[in-house]
Image 1 (cartoon, one colour):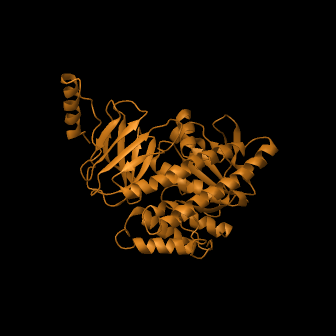
Image 2 (cartoon, helix red, strand yellow):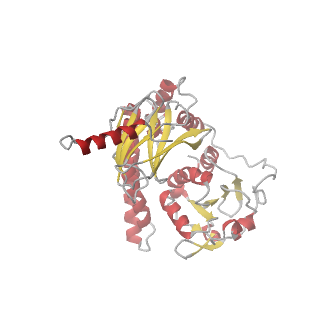
Image 3 (tube, helix red, strand yellow):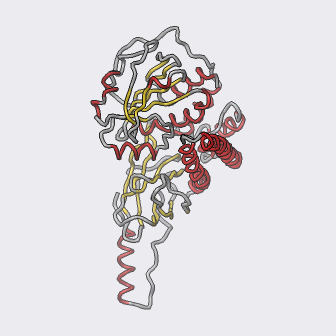
Length: 398
């Protein structure tokens, strides 16, 4: 994307200031043309890239980009007209902002990029009512999620008292997060912004709220990504909770060396701090063995599903054992932090695709997961998204 007519307007304004010193320079107008996204981002360097992403078949793809000028101003026109739904503005490839908009709106954003965070908070948004509403929701929950991440770190302390205190605090924080989501969903029932809050709620407990919002959006928004996501969440929550192991699938295709019923080989590798961790140490627990890497886009998009599963079932005997096919330790550690992968069992030999565990398990593509029973046998493989959530409900009963 190129910065369009506003650039010439800025240059003309500055020239006017030089010739007529009594007239002050003014910021560009926030009244843009329909379909454009303008704004001002504080706290970043000139020429920092701004990317717009939209959902396409469940994946976020780039649909436009621009760069900020010396004042932090940018104007972005998408490659194609946006359909009403969820989109994402990403600053400097690391700081996202959720938007709900389409090509009929002229959206203006003002926000300060704060390093050390993984989301743009306290954004001021005009020209798009739904974007402004969903910004209010994320402004409330993102700081709480950051505090929960710190609580998780304390929960791994060697001091029992600290761990117990962290466990109680985490329960309180989780309740607060659920309450915030519930209050927002109720206050905005029937709107697209409510879908963000419903994503963190249990459709078995709040079924009427799910039905009311989905019913109101059905039709014009039935094909949007988040509508389908919440609809599938509700359908799966009401599906029979059984795990059929009587007819294991035939082994073919990628990552098929080990399958249902096999006893898994042990994995012994170091975590990011150099501590040795063993898969066999988790016997007695249900374990999701997850092969991934920081550079793997599908892996990173799948991580929120794994995080939700871990938070929901970790107190019921569920663990995640993540094997990274990274070769750069710094990128590996940064991805763990950015994606809030709070479980302790992260390992890698930093050998990339020649990772010893990946070779032992016959892994030729990632992400790849195996759900391992308490005795070390494989319950299921190739679990992603809704398949993972459904299978875990079958194992744990809820």
